[in-house]
Length: 331
Image 1 (cartoon, rainbow, N blue to C red):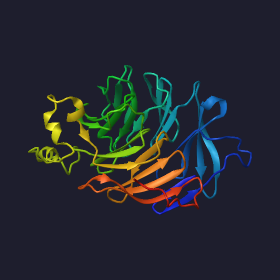
Image 2: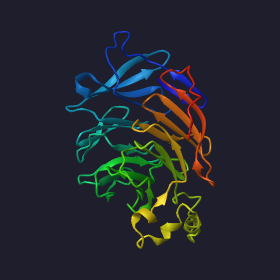
Image 3: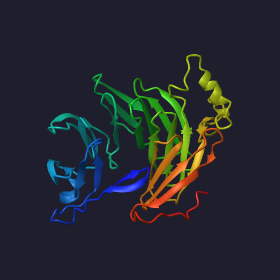
Image 4: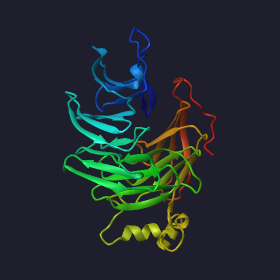
């Protein structure tokens, strides 16, 4: 099922159990700007990626890729398709499905990998060591390893242009933001003090904000010091951030324990615990979209100045598209 999110309406629905298609879906990625989808099918233990065309004149599977082991995830952009298996990443030319690059990684049961959606192709995947991520700049023909955490990496995200990388570890208390060009640590953000499983990280399109979801039932929005709007040659932005109550203690980094010197979230929204939620930003300014594996879609708005609890704008059950859930309380 494919939905527009604003307004919230279903636009495409395809039941692969009908018409003798004989396949189900484990993972699906839409190729932006098209009606083509990369589908990981459950046949043969999830070892196949198929391309589905959903046009008025043709609705069928066309190209396919077969693998010797289970496909953990698939990523697509108009010029590339990326397949992730347990310890390898394969990069293909999208039009001919020609293999361009093969990368060996640390065991990767979640299929962690991200690609830039605009500009030159940039890919982030696991490195070969614990807590390490690998950044591939295909336009620059360069590769870089970043030691992101002491524990295993549990979640990664790239900004749309590939300039910024966010990572979280299996400990789940801290999120780190890096510059992909040189691997510098730009910011350390504190999700909380207790261990958590981070489910999703997402940059806003202007890279002013980062959203984080976890199994603890709180979606956080953090202010970033890395956008072109906020970084000045005289360092004025950093001074502005340190005057904020949420990050004032960051000036004592190196003196106080990390718990106090890390930066805390600006805004929060509460969802059911222990249900996986994916988070991203809406096209309206300061709005966040939250998609739960229980079938609930939220649109929320946060105040960039006052912060605090986000305001719920709307809520739907996307497994029952005609039913709007209006009684859920964002508090």
